[in-house]
Length: 219
Image 1 (cartoon, helix red, strand yellow):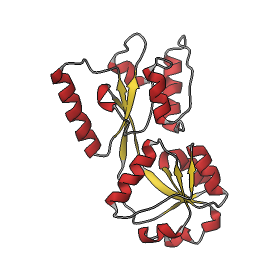
Image 2: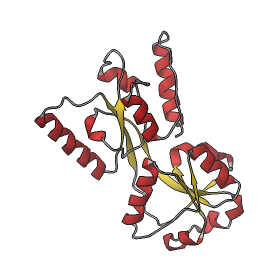
Image 3: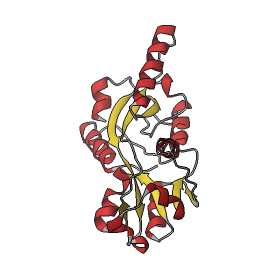
């Protein structure tokens, strides 16, 4: 995964506020980061949702995201006219490879739009997706927050379509739910309601020293 500009600003602020805390940053797919949290290799994870088992963790909303389609200048004829969603199948498509919450979200949006789309390229990182898109390999589905600078600089451009993409929330789950029936039932209800509203939930997050809500929000 990528670290968005918003996350970088949060990390910079946290580092300035707590200068004695050493920060190590790992980059990877959401499922990989969740695994690191599960075995205790990291204390905090910022991921996209949905994630399997997310009902077992507390969360803090970090940011809202919106996905989009992008293309390189080889497809500049699409800059002004846009593209009907029924035409997307006629272009090579670049998607993040599985396992990927972004890929899962894309497939849910396909269902919402009553359309079936298959990728020509399946790529691990969002950075490489942008590189391949700039090189003219097709139209990519990505998180707009990650490519805003690339769009502004002209490396790629957003392809306007009538493919409906719901906005999502980035949510951090911190620590596990105390395992009693009431807590587990409430967490399950919360997760279902958040997911129905398009939220992306960050799971398996633990902060050493049991930081309070304000500390998590600052981070």
